[in-house]
Image (cartoon, rainbow, N blue to C red; front, side):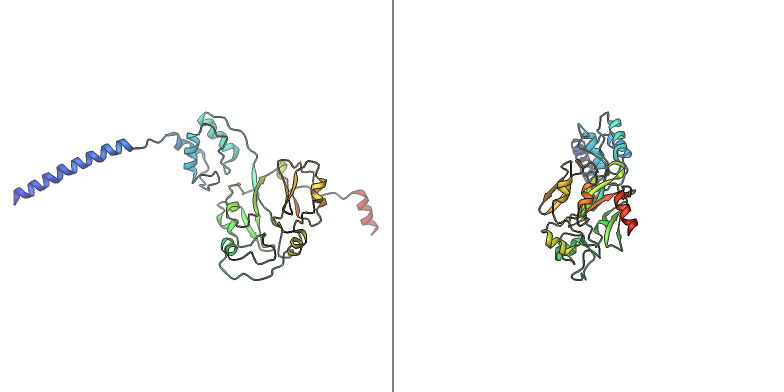
Length: 287
């Protein structure tokens, strides 16, 4: 009996040693040696893990930077140009400065201008609501107002305005990570250049219906009338599928289109208040 136990222990010990050696050699053969620079680059990043860079998180992005031959196609929207300069300096690369961007809500159909035609009584989610039907107004393109964009924002940069029922973007907090853009099933949120002095001009509408139909559904909808396109001296405005779009790379912020739009679908942001012309002032005083 004692001999049997002894041989059993010896056999198990030898077998365990052999398996341990096999595992050791397998581990050595297939081990992955990680570049130590990945840790250093990760410490230079904001650590938001928002996915705005197009990668799963900051570490995955750091690994991509270390392995890349050039940083031209890589950008951290949260850290911006300053972080990219730090990463490039550490890796001994050059990086071009990119124009800062911000999320823009391209829907102006508030509760007053876009009357409800029915009442949604389901789970509070734009994605769910969009999958069930076109919305609770006659405009099938506009904001659904359930706040999916608010939920996905890691920076508290977007909130629902209870007065208008539309999302509002906090310029000081928005990092242009793009999470809200991806979350919106109606594609009304767009990343645009912040512009000179944070001034921007854009069409706050995505309705592609013909003019009469769009205007009936929403009083401030773009009707594709082409008036803005005709007055633009920089060819920055195109009309596609009954909808005007302003190219922020071509727009020089002259604001001619804003004054020309009959439905006020074109918005000007962070501009000084317009001073009435002399003739207009005289007319107002006479009245």
